[in-house]
Amino acid sequence: MIVLIVAIMASSSGGDDEPDRSPTSPATPSSTRATPTSEEPQEESGPRGDVKVTACEVDPSTNWAHANLLITNRSSKASDYLVQVEFVDASGTRLGEASAAANNVAPEQKVDTKAQGLDQITTKVTCRITDVTRFAS
Image (cartoon, rainbow, N blue to C red):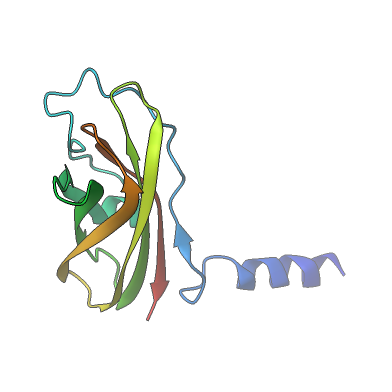
């Protein structure tokens, strides 16, 4: 009976059909950043390391924040991505959020995409990736 349970658990974990989720990192104040409107590049493992913020702005005509993202599929299989981004002010207060998706990204392929917020924001923001989910296509 124990062998059966272990076998079931082993076969259900780590399969490529299961989503790879990177942990959500806590928000930290951006006052120590040289550029308060973008996220500093970080080398991370897993799906979170596949996504970088390349621009973070509030459109002056709509007051909507957006994050330009670069997704690089570092896995060995074509993958679909779902990225969650939050927009925070200098004190770390969350002002809004947005999502972006990219489908059928080949291994080592790079894709530019945008996470567009719809909240009215009238201050500079920092864009933070809060979650990345990667599924084998």
